[in-house]
Image (cartoon, rainbow over all chains, first blue to last red; front, side, top):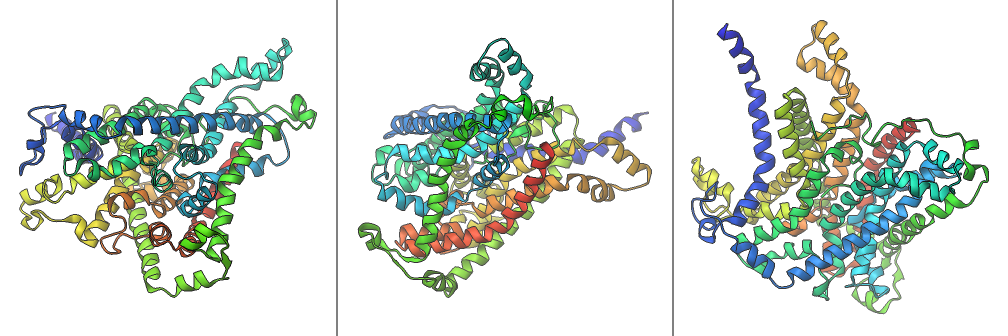
Length: 281
Length: 326
């Protein structure tokens, strides 16, 4: 009797061990970032790192927040990201509606274009974008970044929104039109409320993409250091904090927090519609 | 099971379309052959033309010009034909970078695909609670912003106070006492691979797992009844069923690791020496650090051409799924 209950447990042991290893490997860097941020400096710079901090401190967070320009870069990041996401949402809503609800010549070609744009080799376009921005006097300016991030998030937003609009039965709008609504009115009053969760999820993923973007923020904002965004600031932590790893980790935590929270809130959607390719770092 | 609430065969479509698409005659705009759809897509087209096509064309042009700091300031770049490409292709350093790029890509993609498949298979076999915990930690690792993760990895591998050196020393590998990871080319390369694998596995594993859940259980059962072992079941049932998703994830990972620019730039800037310089890093270094915009553009274009092979694979897969959802 006893052997029977032990046997399956033993058989599942390797499985459970590998699951535990996966969890530890996934979480440890995140945990280490947060725990370092809360540890006093003398515990950070010790020969025996403590896996669990004995004493907690907020000093590092205070240093990070009080660092030069932290509030400014935070504001820049928010402005650029929100601008890009709202613009992408507006433009994508129109395009997605046209693709999902209307029949027209070139619809397939348009979607193909969107898919190609989604895979655009942005890393290879840094040089021409730098030169074009220089020629048009757009270097060192936040609107340039907004435009680039708009374009980075747009294809993905169109693809996902098209899917969401597709899930709303057109009959609902048709019913509203029969009752005397215009087509636009029917869309706004009937489809939009149903679309709201999809819009929210899509825009949050766009938000993360733009929030994390580093390459263009790094190469297009050169002279006007006040226009830098958080990722660039964080990447130059050695200039800001020197060897103060506690403050560096506190800054990383503050920077990563919005993305982590949004991802956890949206985990339901993570696998369903967002394997599309745009959501990556 | 909160992470995978909706099981869908194709990751492209958030939900299955509940009702068939209305026929054209029902559609008032379609009947009128109106200009509305074109007006609605016009801003998107405009954006793509100015922010994607134009820079791409410009990059092609620059790669055929003599374009250095002087031309950047004064303009009037001259066309020089294929000279930039010839210079690059004759440069042994460039070939070294190409070789390294493919090595980097191959190591990363193989590791990512193998680990992700194993994790996906494992998650499928776990019980409810364990599955939720593993999926949640995968999502958290995936959500970690690139720059933050890169910074954390620099701290993990710090020579003096890094936890990795501490762990390695305490299990008796004394040579890792204060081992300077970022001063050694191979070590820095290995850290970047670890970082990219750590960041990419969650996406691949979650996608593969959600595809696994769509395989009908009867198939496994009948395979088992026929006496197939675990390996045989994977080869003859699981893999063929998941082939499209495998291909999709594979090509996406190839593209992403090919473009792994941010991690490298933030962590090592391609150094020490050239040890972690892959093509995108090389292009930006050449253009923006040594002001050879022409050579940098040419290198970028070569990168795009090399990548487009994989892209074709990806698009074929995409297009097939597009046909299925239509």
